[in-house]
Length: 63
Image 1: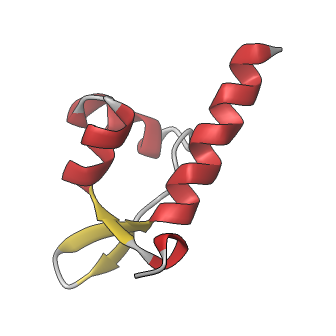
Image 2 (image 1 turned 90 degrees about the vertical axis):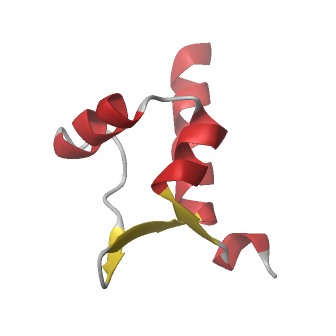
């Protein structure tokens, strides 16, 4: 499967970013993390969206 098309769940994002669930929802609410796509009752993100967000945060820290 193409990594850019891979779909990530909240559990996947917590593992990748090490951000706690509550903090992640706070970031989403404040517009500081991409909003998920919702399918049925699941919230999912594309791997590329999360990767872009992580790169942006890394760039901000290095300034």
